[in-house]
Amino acid sequence: MEKKCLDCGDILRGRTDKKFCSDQCRNNYNNRLNRDSNNFVRNVHGLLRKNRRILSDLYSEGKMKVHKDALFALGYNFSFFTHIIETSHGQKYHYCFEYGYRETGDDFLELSQNSQYLEYH
Image (cartoon, rainbow, N blue to C red; front, side):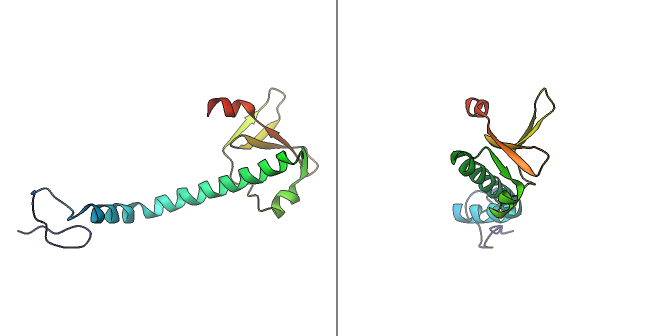
């Protein structure tokens, strides 16, 4: 019985446990298998990078307080962040890597940079 390459279907020659005729076919096959999960991760990572860049740019400009609508206008997606830190005073900061914000209750956000994040990563 002849075995065929799982990617291109060519007849396999050589070892009996061989599944692919070349490294290119092996890579093509595995990339096709992982495409959906890789795309999801790539898209989420892209959103996190965009959110981080927006916060970083605003923070670098010296802005310490911004209106929520300003972040929306810049394309910030509030559904994506890396972690939340709650202070001993009960204030919640939403971070996107080392840059974050806390809601002040009046539709304004207080920006912050977590220097401890830089030490650990």
